[in-house]
Image (cartoon, rainbow, N blue to C red; front, side, top):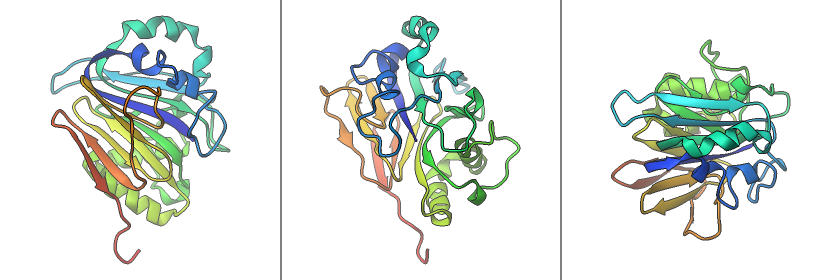
Length: 236
């Protein structure tokens, strides 16, 4: 399992989202409060962000296979990194999966950043030469990219039908849209005056976080936040 976070709104420092809050992703890397599977997330971390507001926004990433709490260089740089759209994650590797930077979210197709919090049987996913790693999350990301993010909800439902034990909390962003699925683990929404945070668990106890029900799809745009129920197709 993992913990992840997404931001869409005004320019904010990566540090203010990932490191500074009292229960930030850095703290969740060694002491998550709502994680259902695993005790900590020490198998890597990654931060992705977009560097512009144009139609050709470019995703940038910083990933590591080391624990987030141990990376002092990122701690010094994060306050200087600013973006209106961020996807970050700390990783607890699925048993048997490699521990390497390429297996750590966020994954990208050059347009989207994507994180997976969960587990899925690789046997139900199509083989993909574009996957960044052989781990389940990387292959899932490649599958989602190939089918298109407009099909994210439908793709998650179809994969869940093929693997009933799968946990498929997905978080994705392209600079103007922030998408998420809740399937088997936790996700919370924070609607701030300057933007919206989606996170596996709240990063503090101050703001008015809202828990998203299981089996739901979330879309955040400049217009607002939309929640849609995800259900198995009839006959499944």
